[in-house]
Length: 270
Length: 282
View 1 (cartoon, rainbow over the protein chains, first blue to last red):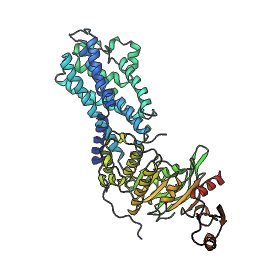
View 2: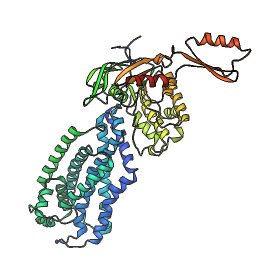
View 3: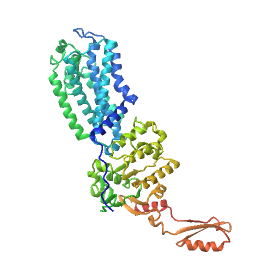
View 4: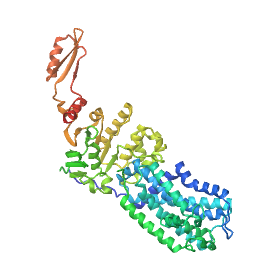
């Protein structure tokens, strides 16, 4: 009897398995009513609710919905990346999904590619939904010219930083419910002190300094540069949009988040 | 180490703090056999199995699974294994067929998902979402996910916990048909009738060591233990313990004109010897 195994066909490529995983992740997200309502619909409700109630003039002909557009999109991005990743990966870890995947020949890269595909799809869906509601209900002015480019890179960098942080903090929670109970208030507080729900210059100075450590503030500030006239840059702490600093801080958070992921990611419960 | 073995373990030690969950275990599982690992909770069954599956590291000893050290097993090695975890595969929004197709796509030469559904009796549930299945159906889905990659070695960690008796019998016939296909299986179970029904050999684990390895009918000296013969005579139930039951029954038969009334010959059950074995060591 020979000890050599019969020659087997080659394993499927990482690209092919990544495509499968992307399909799995999209179905997992869009078929779950809770995640769709929580992540996609909640920002729209915020926009409709606060946009209808709050009615103040920020000067330069900017009303609240126009100001809030940048903030609610930032909140939508944080929901699609940070909260979505933290809550769902914690759930997959506690219910054994990750352990089962780790025991299969699925390339681990493919799992993360699938997650990125999910964040991209949910982020785009959220932004499109908010823009449509903003234009149709509140008649907000869409960005023009080079502002679209800024919109794109701020969104990509912000979503990337928040996705990596979400994957990293998922390891701290015991299950999806405890992850939700931990990350949702943290995200809300960060959004409050980052000028998402009210003009940033109304946030006390020391809270502005706290907010400046975290990525949400820079994401929201970058998006304000897209939706607000440049005359309002004077109301930012530095008197300008600081787009260079936005890029650097979000970039640093991407690197930090990646290092945290590599050091802390676990495929099974402790 | 036995190079022909599907699993070969020598001197395996795994400690959690001061406690050794596995304490110098030696075991060889042959290719093509169904091996049942028995033992009370905390005896080290799951620890041993999860070390073989590559989920846990070990503190000492040598382990080879299909010729590979599980601590260094890559994708190609994992593609040869099927794993049915005690905890199951988790919640999902995907349908049963979608879950199986996704799992199949990780392997080089998977089985057809529809054939696997037929094999585990879930064809009618192919379109149902994973989370809507009953406990027994979920477990069959776990097994389906475990075998869709056409594994040469299948790990089954307490696969029938929570099954009703009919579902267990269906599951047993599924395992027998996998055996026909040449799959080696390492089964852990709390059900001794399951081990007796399915396993070619059983190993009893107690305090992190193998108390004994034997065929189910011989373990714990069952094959040679005194038999108990019982019958009815003069309207009363009579029993006798004997080392030579054949001769005894022949004698008995001579005393009666026809059938010996209510004749029964019994050996200690697997449960009797198992409880004695784990009792002796605790």
